Image 1 (cartoon, each protein chain N blue to C red):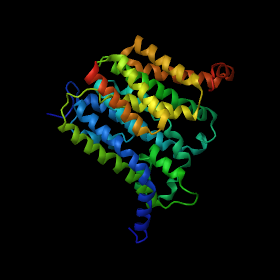
Image 2: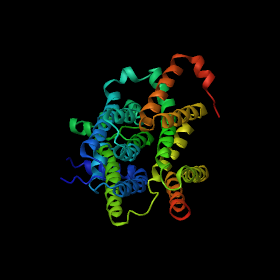
Image 3: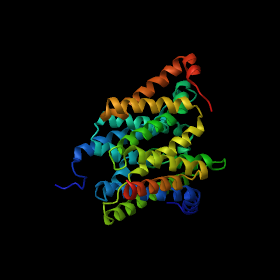
Image 4: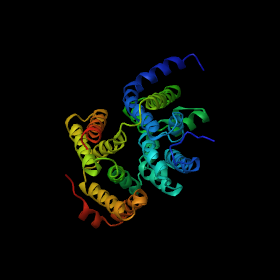
Length: 114
Length: 234
């Protein structure tokens, strides 16, 4: 049967990612309603809330960059794309513009230059 | 539905409009990427309904094609979506009376619906209005996703580099989250852990780096002295 998946990807492999993430995400959204008292004012959770997001995003930037290493242009092209994205974001701070601009710059590099 | 619900629905759409417009380009990009990677178009709404968390859905494309296991996926989901644990503390879900409505409200408590509910002027929000805001946000994410996926099925797959949108997305999110806590040590430690994990255990980068980062945060909580040594405010 054809499940409409990319070559080499199985249905069980897809569900093994989607279902755990779905359960965890809904659990995180539900927990505070059930445990308001335990979570409100808890210092440890407050610290995690303050320190976790930026670190997680930094890990994700590196993770996605590793994924680009095998693409044409490799790491140098990807780093130029990151620089364009950061530059646009520092200038206008418009997320849509920064993502679009960085991606277009990267695509121009790998399709036309490298 | 009572006669008073209609103005509330209109009001909800009006309140959600600006944020929902911002979702359209990202939704289009998500759908486009899905079909360019090789998923049939209808997988896009499945991803967006089963997971319904934008950046996590983009990341799930990578996780699925890389073939990571359920434990790795769960840890990644926990770390990436951890921020959601705070939203319910102040989200006005009690305004909704029906159990099904409350369940939907919990499931669809995204960054965007939280932001809209938090930014509105003080005063009670009605249940129908809150549900409208959340349903409207999800519609404005799922429908552009489908459109993007259908467009992606027509354009040739030979164009390379579209997947860089994911790198750019996380660069922007890293910048924005850094503005909330300008401690440079967090970025440097997390980045270094990820690079080391990527070089030593390439297949397990996310799980190893995220778990190690989590342990360091616990250590910083347990030892205020360590926390002071590491902290680097800019």
